[in-house]
Image 1 (tube, rainbow, N blue to C red):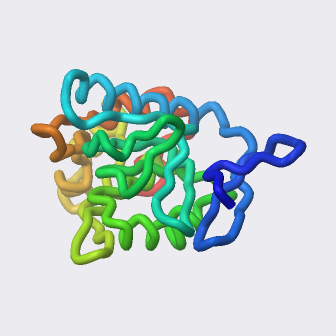
Image 2 (cartoon, rainbow, N blue to C red):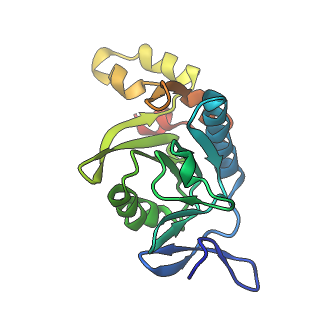
Amino acid sequence: MGEAAVWDDNEIPMELINGKIVMMSPRPGLDHTRVSGAIYRIFSNALEGKRCEAFPDGVDLYLDEKNHFVPDGMIVCDPSQSKYDRVVGAPSLVVEVLSPSTASRDRGDKFDAYGKAGVQEYWIVDILGRSIDVYRQKDGRLVMNHVYQYFSPEELAENAGREEHFRLHPEDTEQVITVDLCGGFKVPLAKIFARVLYGSFLYTHL
């Protein structure tokens, strides 16, 4: 059990979660790739020339002895954690993009493992809902900080035109995430979700 991503004869990747080998999704969908790729590009551009480094989907993470994951994105601020073919120990920030086969693990066992290991910030990205749950570290566990929901300019304009008691609160339509690493930087939701093909959340949920 020495590898984070385990491959059988059919080349199906797996992770080690609480000491047990678990099969991963064999191939992500296009929206999954769009979203994880956009997040990595934003992170990488913001951190260019700085101590912290962004890593994309596909990089092995040896969180601890019993948990070897392949997150959808990471920021590592301790260069000594970056080895030849893996990251070792808790990254400063981890991103997991939900898929039907991994959602329960991303919100369950992996969530707990990231918190106990000391991950400072954890993003759970829901493509269908066009939302990002941001959790931050507190006393050895991850605590909800904020849920960010993407709305298109047309949806925001429609919301602004609604009667006040039907209008979303400004906090619920915040469109920029602030990351407090390496001097801090901003992540606009539009750059993550603008190309996602799913329909309008605002129109179908209000």
